[in-house]
Length: 438
Image (cartoon, rainbow, N blue to C red; front, side):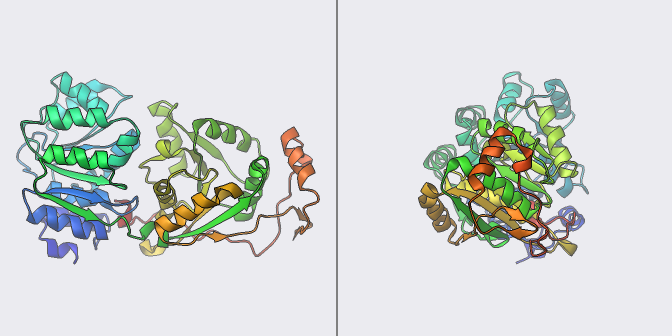
């Protein structure tokens, strides 16, 4: 099936062509016809990062809009401000040949400007839950004409404590209008299912599951390095960075504290060709946007983040994802490595990125769970050794003293850059977009 078979409005075809999107992804192929052909249906879809789920709900919504009615007809709820901006941009691209007005609603910026945008004739509102409730309580937004409500990244909204806000919006603020629900989640938790059934009264729910889609797995080379002593972790990480030579990478940690510490170490590290920045929940919205813009424009080439801080970020041309900390949950691993599936080559051809995990020996069981979850083996690589005169040193006799040098800040003890010509090179970058981003 292709988009031509879906009998979409001409303006939507034009938008897709301008976006250079010709064929649907699996989640789009399954969701869009169900949403269009069953006008009373509710969609509950399980799909992973990078599956193209944004267009899976954006196309049915735009197809069902009344372009002449300048009132809010669709609400898309997202967990983060970054995802709010990205989803809104997809709608803007898709509707560029229409006069549909899309408004972004999130905290950290002036609410008055958002109110004016809504009152000017917003038809689609992409919002974080807290700010939307604020607008509702001020009587600055009216849900009476809403036809669709979308929960994007529902599992992450639950993780971030938004479920009471979601329940208020769906079960109280919208209880008299009964819009169609479209729920998208990487993991379909029981609390999420229960909320959907309460909102829809358990009727006309169509469940779609493409969570086993191997998009982020097949488009990524996966490796791990195993070590015994956690005190050696940073020491090994630096050598891995020197070996890999990432052109544009994300480095994931499990806690803000580790992120702060790692950022402080990396900015002082010599001869690794990394220009790092840290994105965390402690940053103001303005500072977060500045950091992300620098990363997208390649003014920096390494972004350190936790899972929560990086959730929903769509950044193209990421050559490497490093799991400095192995995630506790298998699904978070897939979300992380999905960033490397955004590497593109010429004419939009997918090029495989590289995902590398640092695994302490007592974490082997966690690694095995991750492999079972994605049904794919992660290849083990030997830890890099100290280099002398361009050759790998096969002996560990200097490792302990070198590690101590790192701790003392002794720059002379740091390993030199290798001249080994056999090291892997990053593939050619391209700014071409792919449907998987949407």
